[in-house]
Image (cartoon, rainbow, N blue to C red; front, side, top):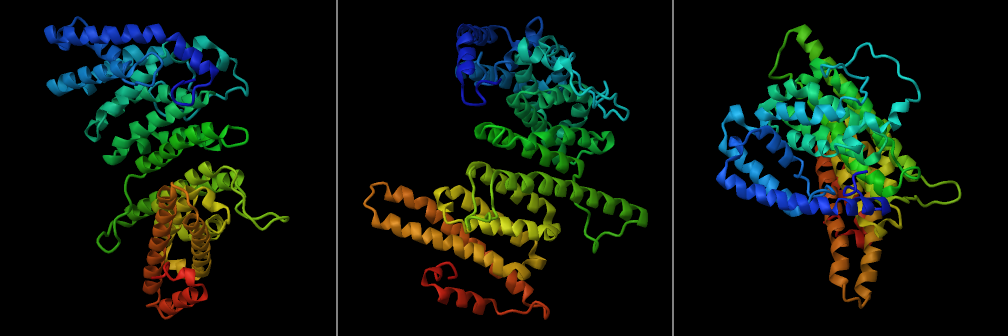
Length: 481
């Protein structure tokens, strides 16, 4: 368990205590090394790669063997070396040797059946037994039980990559991919999260450079198969804080896979006239991208939201239930990202998404956790922007959700003003921010409806509809100003 990544339990505290002497020694050693580097430059040492790898092992101040001072010295020395050397001796140029000598040996005994030794997808994988005894074999995971600093070194190497280093990253794939998959496939949740974070950092420069390595290697399916189970670690089987920690790492990783695999949207048809065969390939790519995003939206985000909450009231009550509001908020934030990526294809999912948002916004107890309502409002705003061609059909449901939320906030606002609490200003800040978000959502909806009203089929008097709502309850007038 990575003690610093989650709240320290009793075992984590024992681990931290175990490394107490090691932290002191490491800090003193790095201070001495910093002084020595003034006399002897790092590149003039007998084995510069070894020194750089050693410094990289202390770059995470949250590791139990590292202190803030030690991490600061390590980053300072590595930064000085990186800025003083040309490309042939840069940190990225040396990262291959670092991976080969200090990362690969620690992960070489861990099985990764989904890929070949060259870091490519295994098209003919050997069927694995349902129960693998090596899962609990400490000798098969030196990176977890012995050479624990290998993960920190791996993470540091990945942080050095830039969009201009794509060819170097591809050359390092045989060294990087087995290690990352070993982390994601581990049974311990903190290591899964660490693997997801490292994968996200690895793919970010590739996506920015629109590099097509995932398309050529079919590794997107390998990564997707590894990360998708991480999205199912939900309460009550998984403690809420651990679930949040993993989901915060897994969702950015799964979206980065899709962005890297499908680096750009098809060009505009008005400005681009490819051959029929090229047009067909582009349409297939676009459809594959949509399918990938749809799977995340429906099978992960929406299903998880229904699992950890009850957005639809049960038979014996009319009130929705959100027992895990922090996870519900996280999932709504991911839903916003998914709709942004899907664009107009969001219209296919309106009948599943809108009831979730309206039931969340109209929950009378929603004001007990305002970030959930803010996330739902921002999600509704993105839905309006993405699914604008069909929003006019759902305007009644959308306005019902926004107005219901506004009225609940107004009720709480009255209670705050009546109280003599010295913290009144602090308590009022959250409701004020939510009200501004709701007003912005209404403004976006009005703009979209007015645009749609120009069509004879969707003709409507938006101002009249909004005025009717405002006249129905004086508290709504500010919302529709």
